[in-house]
Image 1 (cartoon, rainbow, N blue to C red):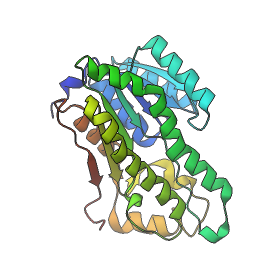
Image 2 (cartoon, rainbow, N blue to C red):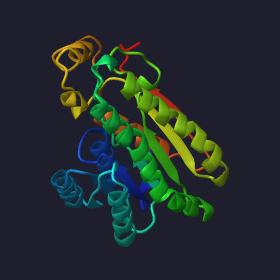
Image 3 (cartoon, rainbow, N blue to C red):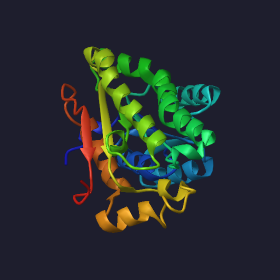
Length: 255
């Protein structure tokens, strides 16, 4: 696969402490992009940045909580100071906290909405001007949002999580009407079952790794974080006039 067009680009990747975000950051850096690693867990970001640097890449660890506007603003300022303007932004930060709606877990609802929807919006707000400016000077500019098959598929206990991902999918489609005419590409990726640490955050045994989710992984198999990263690298390395706008990617056995 030819990803040479990624060389020299400046990428911002949220959720870079683990899973899809970490795998995406690692792969973009391997193809020559300068990468800002954004997440809350600074220790993990520093480890990943050091790994990327050892392999000859360029990365900076930027501790950011996407649910906090001041934190996002400070992180964006540091990215601009150390790497310059971004031309590739990947919203990979996300949380999945399923529970039956009648459990009334307002704490989980707030966390998922603040991270999966408002958090993505904060990052978009922080870097949209960069993307528009890059496209205006003839460079390639990409916004990639990592949504979920949950935006369409129905699973008991996942109503609020699914609603946040449906919002992100619809946001991506709507943003194309604003950014596409200015040559900024917007790509929405909806993975199915993927092996990341999200499953370990589920606090309901009936729904988590020892219950429904674990049974689905056993029956259907899963994608890897690296396979999602490969998709991100693919779509962002196409010629600048080619926008792969919506990608649904599933394990072959998942309906």
